Length: 171
Image 1: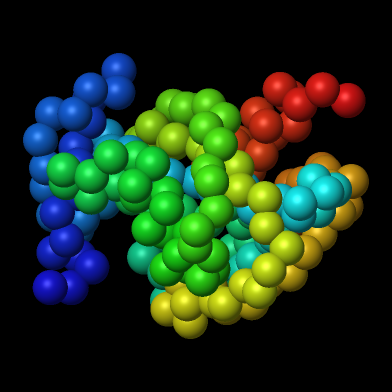
Image 2 (image 1 turned 180 degrees about the vertical axis):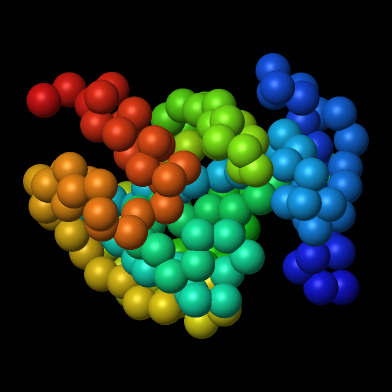
C-alpha cells in the first residue's frame, strides 16, 4: 500500500474521531485529522534536535522542523503514533514520551489536531532517508533566534507548536 492509500483517522473540528479516509483524500479535501509531534531534547534539556525534511515529502518538503511525528492512522492512539513515528523518523525507541499539549492547527489545506510530546535523548539519531534529509542538535536560544526570522524555511505547524511550547515554558 502506498502512503497515499494509507487509511488515516478523520476527526471533526473539536477533536472527535469521525471515521477514516485515505491519506490522499484527507490531503486533497483538507479534512480534519490528527498528527503527532515529538520534541526531542537532550537529557540536560538545553538542546533540541532540528532536522530538514526530505525534498520528496508530500507536504512542507525540504523545510526545517524540530518535531518528529506524523499523521495518526485509522484506529491508532496518538501516543502510539508518536512512538511509531519517533522510531521511524529518527531511530529513537524505548524512551518515555511526556505529553505536552494538543494544538488545533487550522491553515487550509492543513487542518489537524497536533498531539505534542517530549522525549529526552542523548543517544544516536538515525534518519529515515524518505523522511529526513539531515539534522543536528541546536541550543534552545539559537532555535528561538532562528524562528524570529520569518524567512527561515520552517514548517508552519511545527513553528506554531514550538512557539506555543516556548510560551508555556517557564523562563
